[in-house]
Structures are given as C-alpha cells and as structure tokens.
Length: 403
Image (cartoon, rainbow, N blue to C red; front, side, top):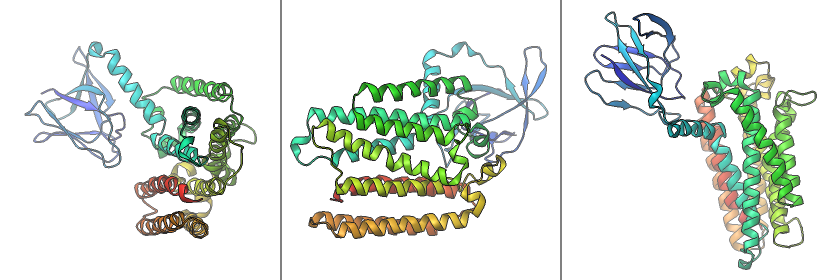
C-alpha cells in the first residue's frame, strides 16, 4: 500500500519497514537499500534518506517526532510502497504540483540555515548593545542615532553571513563529517548558488562600508571582512583556521577587535560627539576579544574527527580535548574575575552592585555547566558551545553597567 512520506533535508538515517507499524526510520546511520519503482515495473537501486518519522499503513495521516538536536520544516513529499517480500519501494513523484512559492520557501529555509542564525543573533545583539555605550542622556536617542544603528546592523549582518558562507564553501569536505546538516553538504544549496551568495555579499560588504560614509564603520567592517576571509580561504600565508594561533586571533578579532570599537566610534560620529574611548568601550573590546578566543578553542572540540581526517592541526588535535577545555575554562574564569574587580571599582553604586552580582552569577553558571559536559560526546560539547553564546548575550546586558 503506497504511503506519503514527508522528507526533511536535515535527515541522515534510512527507512526501515515493519509490517505492523509501517515505515519507521532509525536515528542510526545504517545503509539500507530501497528500490525505485519505474513505470515499466523495473526496480532501480537507490538510497532512502529520511528523518525520524513514522507512517501508519492504516491511516492517511503522518505522525512525526522532533529530532532532539534540530527541528526543521518538512519540504518534500514522496510516495512509498512495499513489495510482497517486504522491500521498501520508492514510487515516482509528480513534480507538477511544485509551485514557485514552495520552491522559494525551501530555498529561503536553506539560506537561513546557511547563514548560521545564532551568529547573526549574537552580532545583532552585540551591535545594539555597543551602540548604547556612547549615549550619555535621553536626548541622544535622536533620528541620527537610529540611522547610525541601522547602518551598523546592516553592515555587520552582511559581513557575518559572508564569513559563514566563505567558511562553508571552503570547508565542505570537513563539513561532510562534522556538520552534514549544512545546506551545501546536504544538497539543499548547490556550489554555484553558494558561490553566488558569497560573491554578492562580498560586493555588498564593501559597497555598504563606502556608501554610509562613516570611517569608523568602514574600518571595522573591512577588518571584519579581511579577517573572516583570511580565516577560511586557501591562499599562501592565509587559511588561518589551519594555524591554531592565527585561528584564535581570528575569532578574537571578529568578536571584539573589529565591530566593537567600529560600532562605538560610528555612533559617536553619527551623534556628532568627539571620538573618545570610554571605560565601558575599552572593557567591552578586551572582554569580548578574550571570549571570542575561547569560542575559537571550544568550537573545535566536537570537530576533532573531521579535523583529523582533513589534516587540520587544531589545538584540540595537537594537545587533546581535555587540556584545551581546561585552558578555555580557566581563561573565562579569569575574565569574569577581572570583570568583577573592575565593576567593584565603579563610582556608581547601581553599576557596582549589578556588575559584581551579574558576573559572579555567570561564572557560577559556567562552572556548573562545565562539570556536566562529556568531552567524548559531540552533542554534549556542541551544547556547551551554544551555552557560551547565551553567556555572551547576558554579557551584552551587563556591559551597560561597566561605567
């Protein structure tokens, strides 16, 4: 009996057929053969790739369970049946029902995943937070401020998507092992489409920096663009991600040394204020540079197998996960301790209380989460990596009290 099956582009497991329960997919990567039923009755061997879903032979509805790590929109419909000997049969699908709206939605969904939304969220929160640091009164919330903020958001979001895109384009071989759910590896976006996106964003980044006629914004964006390019591209003296020290510098540069001072001075310039480095801006630049360097170390822990296979000698490959994790944790704790000390020296009581209690709380949460991590489990280490971004978001609120 033919059944309808919803296919998700992030799935990597294979169909199993059970007569009593219908089609059930496994969460394990096992190779299971299926056959495509052609119009003339012939069968062609094929692979059936699907996410965790169950199809009931007795009902026409579909029940699906969410994957624990990712939930994605189902975008393709395919018909399956079964032969008398229990083999899975993939029946031809009529593509005439595909509309431009469904194609657009599928491509947009792939582009969103390609853009790495959590990094865009982090960049957006960072730009908005840093843009508040130059303000000294309610009167500074002027049209000039909001125009400057929008300019900075557009510029660095485009730069962020570019750096994610160029990295995926160059690292497709490693991503087949480390991140097989990415659109380029899974086939949702072709190499030509990704190249077109990256090329368009290259011109957009440079054009935006020139068009807005803000020297601080242009310098910050250009630095972000150049570091992101040097991190990924295969050119002499570049490909910094394969050079551990330069990889850490790249993450520190893109997290703190580029858009933090760039946005701060850009807003000062937009408001017509003299460009002076404040206490809060100096702390923000240094703290987020350190945090970015730690993110650069932690992000390689779940990718060790892929890095080894591709000859990428990261610190984790060279010295082991345990040593790198311990070093990263100690660096962050020192950074939080410094933030507590700096906050305690503030002349404003509210700033002193919030900064001391806030940073102490974040350091405590970091220790609690670090004690529960399993370094041999990629899911656990990836979860810890994403937890660090939550700490980063919280820090963007606390920097308003580092005055």
